Amino acid sequence: MLYALINKTGIHRLEVAQKLELADLQNRVGVEGEDAYIEYLCHQFTDPNIDLICDEEFLNKELALTCITRRSIALRGQVIAAACTEDGDTIGLTEAQFQLVAANLTFVLIL
Image (cartoon, helix red, strand yellow):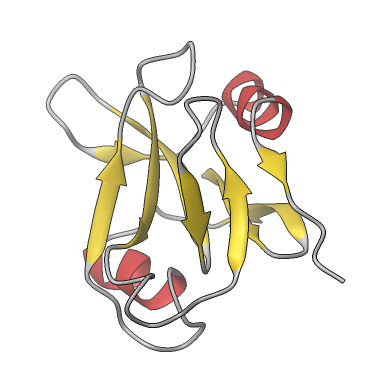
């Protein structure tokens, strides 16, 4: 399954054999290797089935700015882009969805 891992160095392909479960998502967002409380951001892309998953406490943890969505939401820390089913199940992205995510996030270069 394909996911987009988004961090301060850009967007990266994250390919895994099985879909990421809640514990996997908690381990991958926010501070690398530190479990996080996750928050889903919906409706940030023209494809309504794409969600952004981030650490809901990114401001309290003072994480570095990662990207800005097309709706001007600033995200910090590591972020995962995933697709969701009509039942709300989180699954991997198609290649077209991955490209849509890559084309519609603004990355901020901080020197």
